[in-house]
Length: 288
Image 1 (cartoon, helix red, strand yellow):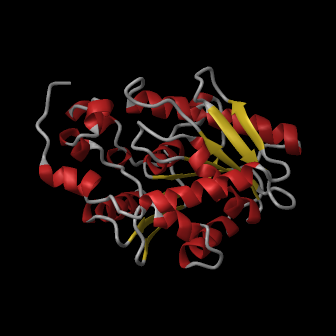
Image 2: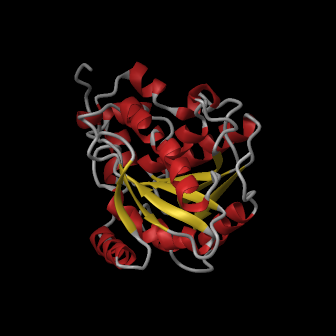
């Protein structure tokens, strides 16, 4: 990648304009909630799904009989944070009857976005095998994630699993929270020091340009107080998903920014929590 000057408009849209002074307080609350989840009965940590040290997941079992698995991918612009920040949301999905998993993955600059996506795909057969071990059958998977994790969730839904020996597609639905699906605007931001994107690699890593017959019902959610760029990414990805024939809903959470959105998901009976419950409540309890 050749050096690219920072575009102040894109830097504001995806970096400085997204930040909020209260984020340290929110992140501390999310970490505390995650620590409580890690101490709960049945929680299993650090399960390997691939050879890389970050290819690990943590699992909280469903309350009652499991009707599926939610694989939740953490945020961090593909270059920071880890799966432990996702522990706080696992009870949301467990309460809906899903084994809930928070998934780690390699980060840039060690890995490109394409390599990260490929590494994340390896969790799918691993979770299907885990379901057979725990429940005696494969369960449908919900791909979920926040920010970079939402990008990975959408990529999993768009993957040709039949071509990889898994048919029918194991991905039953997607919960995509505040995602980035068109990576080209990131080239001219400080984020690209680690991502090392150029026009070709950014386009190749952008699922908004590759929506086709593979997908599934999806909730695309974003905070109404996030930048116009994030809200636009959410709307455009939902429109592309629908245009390809997939059921999709777009949701803007009033007053929420990038991280307060996660606290809203964790709030029982919040509009966001209800939207997630509506999506997952309509899924079949069997694969295929």
